[in-house]
Image 1: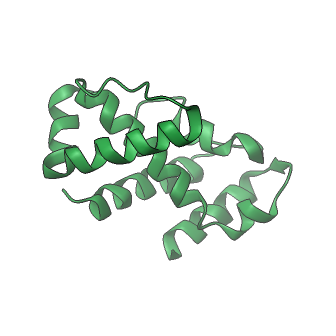
Image 2: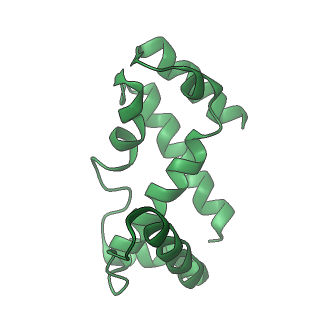
Length: 124
C-alpha cells in the first residue's frame, strides 16, 4: 500500500457510508460520524497489511497532526490497529475538504446532501 492507495480506501469507505445515510444531521458532526464512531480497520494483521511499507510515514503524519491539534501525541504507535484507524481519521478530514457542499453547508445535512457530498468525493 502507499498513502494514495490508503487515501482512496478511506475515500471509498466514506462514499459508501454517505450513500448509506451515515452522517445525516448537523454538518459539523459529519467527520465524527464517518471516521470516529466505528473502526475503519479491525484486526492487527489487517491493519499491518494496510499500513504496509508506509507505516512510518503514517506514524509521522499522526504525530504531527496530534501535536498540532492536541498539543501532544496520544496514539499508541505500538498498536497497528490504532495507527491505521487514526490515519483513516486524518485522511478522512482531508477528504471531506474536497466537498463544496459540506464547506458551504452550516446546519442540517439531509439524505440529498449526503448523496451530493458522496458524488463530490467520487469526482475529487
